[in-house]
Image (cartoon, rainbow, N blue to C red):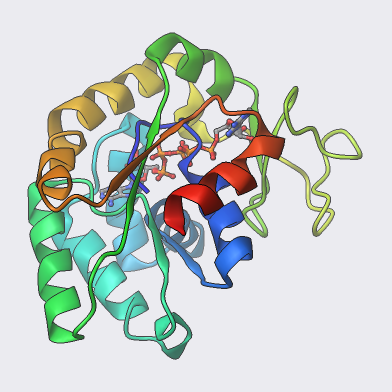
Length: 209
Ligand code: AP5
């Protein structure tokens, strides 16, 4: 899943996961979990995440390499938020080659900056199970509580307007250029990030086959 912050990568990744029965590997969630547990990687990652910058490639590549070694990804997986830099794309190429795997699709989710800033101010997340809500388009059944596990919903620290602007700049400078390498491979599928939620399963199935 490739696209700017808040475009809807995670939302679409979970729809694809349900459609095809494959797990989602989300680097943002793995890093937030490491921060919450106070691991060595988490302590380093926190400052970068709070500023909306990329966590150093060595840390993220190590986290992804370890995750892709677990048995549940053997039947396929969705990468949400990785790779995000040229060094990460090259690390992914190496991991895939070693394991004789290939990327079938790159889903490019598109959305304009103003819509992103407006949308992220109304996002709420569950710190316990990772479920994601939106106060207008996907409100929880009970205001402030997670439908899945009942935990109290929070607003992410990096969903403040000034941090969102920095995340958008970082995306444009470091991540968007990766599209070129996947376009050359002919595997990019474009999905507008403002597609109505109930239309996404049908659209994604038609694009992914
Ligand atoms: P990460 O958690 O990956 O954040 P992000 O890429 O900025 O993306 P988001 O999770 O903010 O948004 P999304 O596109 O998944 O949108 P969502 O589906 O939630 O990364 C956070 C930080 O971790 C980074 O800044 C960096 O520091 C670090 N990091 C992570 N990966 C890294 C890596 N590989 N390398 C280095 N550092 C890394 O949707 C947003 C909102 O819109 C929700 O409220 C949702 O309900 C709503 N919504 C979604 N789709 C629709 C729709 N179609 N219609 C209406 N509402 C919708």
